[in-house]
Length: 262
Length: 372
Image 1: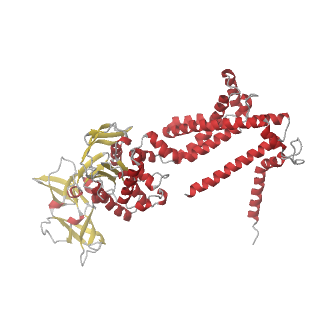
Image 2 (image 1 turned 180 degrees about the vertical axis):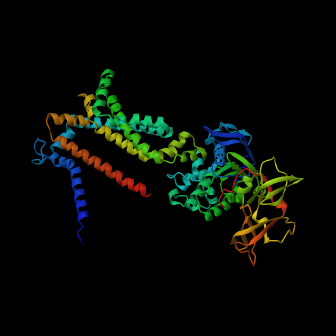
Image 3 (image 1 turned 90 degrees about the vertical axis):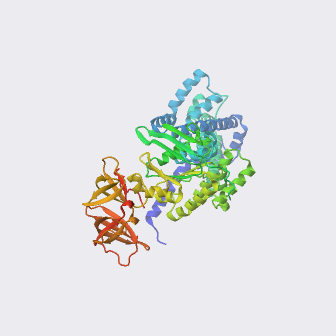
């Protein structure tokens, strides 16, 4: 076999980029098994104490529960609101639809700090700082653009003529939506929901502003832990989240392929 | 097989219907009655208003003016899903996430039909279109012809008294189209429902329909059986759109009950009187023309004779087709039985026909603009 130099160079470049992309994530894993209370690489010694600390310390585990609850509520609210908005925009066509779409997507473009300051100012007046509603509202605002984009992309390839056919077969508008439109744009809705969940789950800037000692999300807890005592529990949390997301994405890929085959 | 004949066809009454989109008039004051159980085709070029009319009947678009009555009930304010009209689309419009059986069961489910009754009706409908073994397949696993059969089964499973079809065979190849045309005819006979069939293919309209409404520029030019439209067209557009034809243009002079037309220096007689002072033409069907050697003269009542030159000669098996160029440069197509010694290209000939076989029509400026 002849050695192909351009191909070899291409492979090498790709490998380097791949390492560059995943290395920061992978560094966290050995750090989480450190024997000493110092966040250093390479770690010294071996222990599971940081995992134990994460699951037993109410500060840590409590914040995980808060984050999970908030992210679930955000996923539901943002998906419902975003899906309805995407459908409305698609039906409007014309300039008004484009304008509304642009407005809905601005939270993605506006710098997080700017949004955070604005939200904080309003929350101080309305006493929403450190409340469940406060978190859900703020995170939903940030998550809606992802849902609008994901569902919108799916609607763009959805054959709206099927709705006319459904009407001719006796289905009302509502019945048509649940029996024809919804099943066919479900992939977009699900990926929108996933994006919404993730957006809320790892949102840190706005959360830092509206947090309270009683109600803290996981990213806020990680941030304050890092700035206070650089405890390797952070690495344990990072490793767990990495594992969790890998499993979810892996399952998604497997089921996605199966769905396409049938 | 005729379990569904109980559903009698509906009558459609279209009265002074118009449809405008901004400043564009898609349909201009159209009136038409379709009789119960009739197979009516809407024939016309694209943009002539035939699909617009269909969409108005189905309730997919709103009327701008006029009234549509279904069995003497005005349906202008009835939403599409309450009209109980079956529709078959050119693009099939099958639900991709449902199996064949689920697609066909859909209209029954919407009507709250019980499960066992639903299964029975679905089986029966699929049998009618010969797809009873495909009920568990998905639309993406079927060919175009099979998909359209499923769409047909789905549109008739709830025994609507009216079935609308919008160029249902437009996306299929010619051979499959002919097979499905025969199936649609058979299904129409078995159901007894009224069928309205939109097509731009005049051959398809002739094969299928009891009557044809010819659409042009948002208006109906003529309504009649295929035979009426072919032998007695009322406008030049209809005459040229249905079947093959040649048009002779010239100055006309009314003379008693006939009209004389001077074409390329030759006086030709056509039956009937000219309407108004506008230009008139004689429309000729290829099979009514005789091609004969120059100087043969009138025989068997074929007293209209005009000279020309053979421009093209086609051998079609049982018949021959000549294209003859006249002195004024116009072309005439003649179809004759196969001759042992056909006229060669470039030879001088006479075209002869019986005056009553020509049709005198006002010149509306239309030219043969359809395929086939």
